[in-house]
Length: 301
Length: 301
Image 1 (cartoon, each protein chain N blue to C red):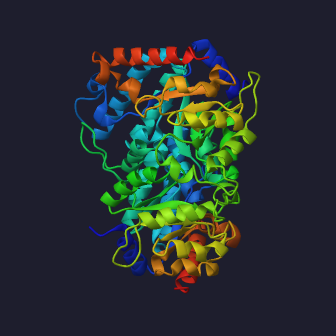
Image 2 (image 1 turned 90 degrees about the vertical axis):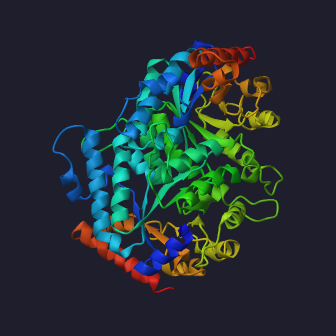
Image 3 (image 1 turned 90 degrees about the horizontal axis):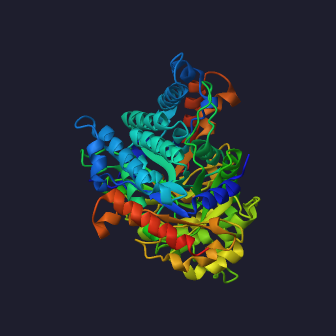
């Protein structure tokens, strides 16, 4: 079985893309075509979940060709309840059919027995007396390391059994990241260096020189990227924060040191809401924005 | 509208209980009555989700009277997919009907726009063009503070709008908590003191002297409890780790300093699997275990 690290490297090369299409559907900001896809009447949850799934499907159809993966934001589906989770499952299938990897963005983290349950939920299989269930069948997940190594390892075990990967929060893109992630430790280094060391320790290196444990590193603080790359020479970086949050592609060069798949650029609003900036049909604007981002990133490596 | 802090204090007093019944259903370890409640054939996910809901319902019926709240572990429902989320919704309703508060244990944490979506998912309401959706209607949630204050505040805003509460991870019960939570900062204090300070800052004090922002503090390290109480004099503590993980009720006294609702003792396996230790019917053993734990804790305050 090819490891996630190698699957990722091969997929990036085959698609000439490091772009990760964020799927953060807000029911109040869906594309008109998605709203039109909802049943004309009936249960609001069913109508909303249908529209959310249609929005994500249309976004994948429009912008997916310029991308290597999608990143569904689990919160956005959970808020619609059980039907939202069903929409997440259907969007995951659609992304796989389009040749895209699926990075389930839930930032989970919990004690061992619970981490195993999250691993089952995301990667499957789930053992039951009635037969095995598939789980979400994600290719990778995001994970929160605050509770320590014994909470990451069950997630990683579930990932590896499914040739999947885990992206661990290291230094995030939000202003509040300074509160805890940047806390100075007794040796003067910020806490995120400890998180980075854990990521580097846990990863297994594949044939393409990339590890199967990655790091979430905000693109809003490029001054950290060289140090992060020193600490995690082989980890793929998942880089949110380009576009709406202010990060710039040209500042991300250190991420690509281990190869073209070393930096995955996550973009959501700058693609899904591109028509608000440039006008025209949402799908056309999304396709153009994704392709433009793809070309800018690919030119760096 | 009565705040979560006051609702909690009043509920603890009315039920003479600080016990939080953990709902961590494992499809391979369900009570026989729950397995019998599943359809005899058909979709494995539907059969598993029916059995999981029946297990939790039976556990609430057996042990709920000795408790003040239930704590569904979201991972255990998510692994069953959309039908698992539906089971979570039905178990939440059943707990409310039994007079119990519901603490949704998902340890969520993400950037502002996503944290707002998690807040909607847990507390509702969710605005959609098709009408408002209710969300899960939890009374409180657990939250992960690694990404900083700006990721907690939207959760707290959603909670407060629903008279709900947030329990923030501060010093957890697992061995790996030492890896990050115990990291020494430049002033020599462990990182969890910084997390505790954030909890103390964010809480609003209710009429009963308790705050609406609580802390998850493992019962496995009672030597930290006095210091945690100094740092967070008004926060309710959610205390996992009694029983299966080795924590002892009699060591938890500092938690109760702000009043009987200052310490909430979370117990899962020691109640749901009590029959494995003492024999007899699972429901009878669970009822006795919960009542024994309730009496032991109540005797402390």
